[in-house]
Image (cartoon, rainbow, N blue to C red; front, side, top):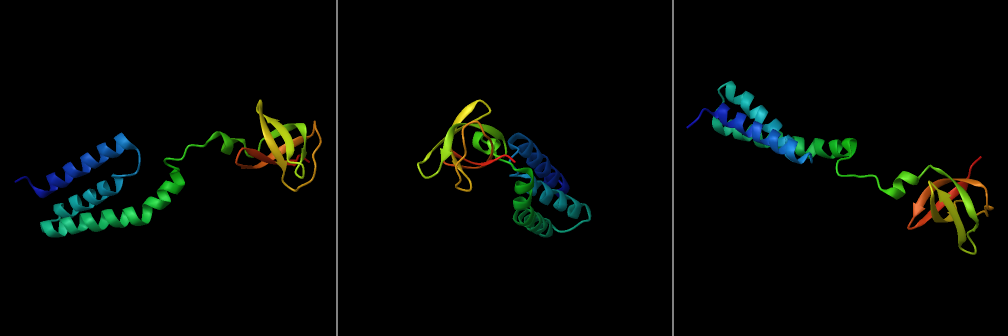
Length: 144
């Protein structure tokens, strides 16, 4: 049977390769666990201690750091068209009147149904800023 440190080195390499292939923060935590176990094995710890170190380090990192890493790195989150339009300025091409449920705005060459953020009417030709998107309607406010 190979030396325990060689097994942990193999696990470490496999986890890094899998992580590089998926880029989904799935195996990196186990790579750190394998690294910790590799270090423990080099100091002559028993195999049961090495396995416990692997499990504890991997699960602790997975539980405590994965949510933070996903939030910071925004993995798996692609900005969609409607999210990218928030904050942009457009031109009212049809008067916006929330009471009669009318209004259109042209932003980045696209025409959107629109409503006023504060409920006030906005006349054709005015510049507006996109505050939010609700369904297929832009919620806009006058540019000051």
